[in-house]
Length: 398
Image (cartoon, rainbow, N blue to C red; front, side, top):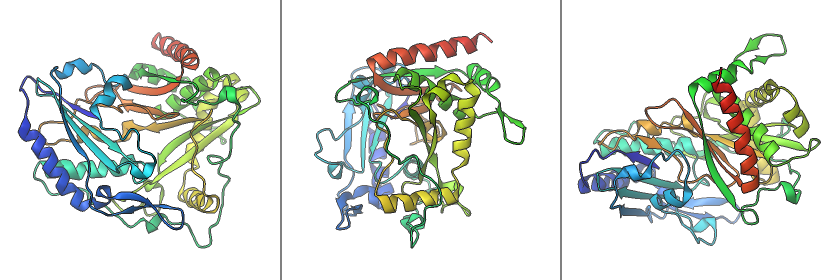
């Protein structure tokens, strides 16, 4: 969801019409979003381009938009009111591929809430759609058009697995370690990482490579390592049990040549860092950072092709349920560049965090701070919060 400041201009009905009309035009190019999911005879889901369209909801609030406060602090009870969910849909086949809700506030502020069906697209693909949509809203030619041929990522014939794919391997499912929102309701929290703190974390975890050279890890690597350690401790995973960190990686630039511009689909690959919980929690922080760094480095074209073939032969999906730590980097998506003609968004944040997924976002357009949001059972969240706050306080003193 994206928030746009109103600056006391009152409600702006023409703006809503512009958003609606430009959405209709964008769907001409990105027409799969106006279709519906079906199950094919081969057991695979496909899009039937029925042209049924995208649900579009208009809502109003008698408050000024400041009532939302800092939306980077996830508050599902409040923020879910700003997006139209398909609650109660019997299966994912009944969930629209895209739903849009536009909420206007008394001050003229606007929230554009979007729900996308991940079966069809990933974050990069929805960004391409948004770029086209906002271009059309400003009466400009689309800067991005979709590349709809998904055969570029089809399995090889015959399939050939070149690497182990632990991102799909079954994990320990002992009841005490499984994060199941149906049996253990989740509480959601967000944690803000200031630039100074991130610099200190990076200084404290320089990576020594196999040839003896030293490199500074990325901001995302140190955040991922810290969150992985903290969640492993919070869930009480035994020292001899395997713990995994799964990171969603945009696979498009990993190909040579890269996937065609505007590739519309799921181009995500999953890196998998794993070790025993004892190794992770008892070694210096740099051990976890190096493990994350090395796992990310494995995501190459060859690895992705092998993963596609592995899925083809085994008909499995990455399973983020249970004790694995799954993380996605929203901060690299260009939401803050989106302009429907009344300025760029002030804040962008998920209305809620999917179960068992950790999301990293930018706090606002005007801030360099990053926000980590997740849900855990209350007892685990209490431990996780103390661990993260300890690190944030410790590093802020340097």
